[in-house]
Image (cartoon, rainbow, N blue to C red; front, side, top):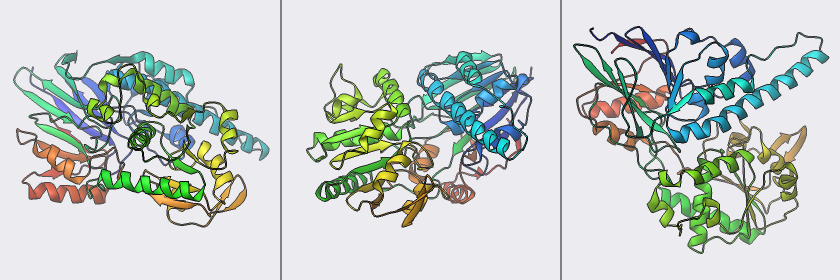
Length: 468
């Protein structure tokens, strides 16, 4: 049978989030990722969302990693009829229930609030389009495949995951599409990690390919040197210590929180950390850190050795002053600590979560410091603080911002432009490149840089279909 295969760009085409690609292979349908578009209203997104295919007709889902912009629509896919296998790495399978259940819980909580508001106004109430049971069903459908293990999930299809170095369990997806007279190798980069970041190994070089879908999040810029970023953090912490205040670090629960714990442990190991207490004030980040502890063998052993890690230890053992605060009561008690503490809490962009409650008690004190270590999207509270806004409204109350704000730009888990170019250059076979998972400006800049290296790359639009 000759090879009959196409690929359709469903999501993350000329945008960063919503990763999803549909492969049709010999009358079978395969999804690469099934991610949510982030930044949009979640209730509106899920209630009005229409898949570009029939979920019950999908034979297989292949998941690059657990981040919601790659996995977040899986519960909706299940709710609308999908009942096939989901293939992912063991690390991703461990993280998925934490992230998906939290996402669905937030949706249901927001829907309940909107329905109460609608009821008071005499408007029609909305029924939920999915439940926590759908998220649990996603987990049940997962089959795990270890890195470097070749499997044949469908006739004419072979799969092998390689380490993408982005977060725990993140994978570069390698697919061999076979017909009786032809074979093509398709590579999907997933999210490529930043080689300078800690805990993760560098992204894997994958040899040869015929077609490459490559992420382009930071296709137009490189990251600040990590050592300079760490020095900036140390200086901000030292200044806060002299001022006698607390330090607040908004951080995402997956990846960034564990990296910040590592960097604080490194500063402690070097004798550069003066604070007496560090609070990880995020139940989700605590759960994910415990999962990282179960997968220490997957983490970069050189990074662990650099902070004095020994067999039998866990990540939190490296910071003697670390306290894990899971309950609401423990979190509220932090606000009674007047100084000498570092508080890591979500959400990473300050558009919700415990960090906002801490801000109500801390932003107006000039002895306190805020350290932003991640991207802050336009319209979020984090972005307004980074941009220097001096008054913000929290829980209906106007708060003056007297705390000092620091922005440190080197702690990215994504490859920068130079790393993307290096990874692309290392691929043999003169493959056709398609740039995905990036804003147009970043994609065009990366396309031009690739052209300088003799690599022609296309920038597909949403809905485009290519023959494989």
